[in-house]
Amino acid sequence: MTNKLLVSTIIVGAALCSAQSQAQEPSTAGGERLFRSRCGSCHSVNMGENRVGPHLAGILGRKAGSVAGARYSKALTASGFAWDEDRLQAYLNNPRQVVPGTTMSVSIRDAAQRTAIIEYLRDRSGG
Image (cartoon, rainbow, N blue to C red; front, side):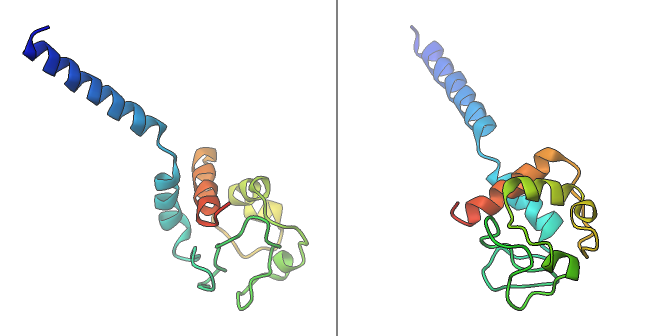
């Protein structure tokens, strides 16, 4: 094999490996970007940092409407459920259908975007 051919083969192989690793990269970076653009003006992922809505640190497994110092609708406080991935999928898709009377008005209709945001929240919570 000539040096030029060897170098070309290495460059093509490296490019393919790079493209493949980017395609398989977890969506956490995308989830963080989506969270910041779609959720970040009202919610934080930092424990105790409530904004218009409660912080979402450790949301998975947490009882809905239970963050101290956060403002909640009566409907969410009385809902009685704990957040899991399925409940978050449904809620983010259509909050007012899942919890009639909630004050959250933002819907994320794209399932892939919802999944990326939920994965980001799960990863931030160490779960």
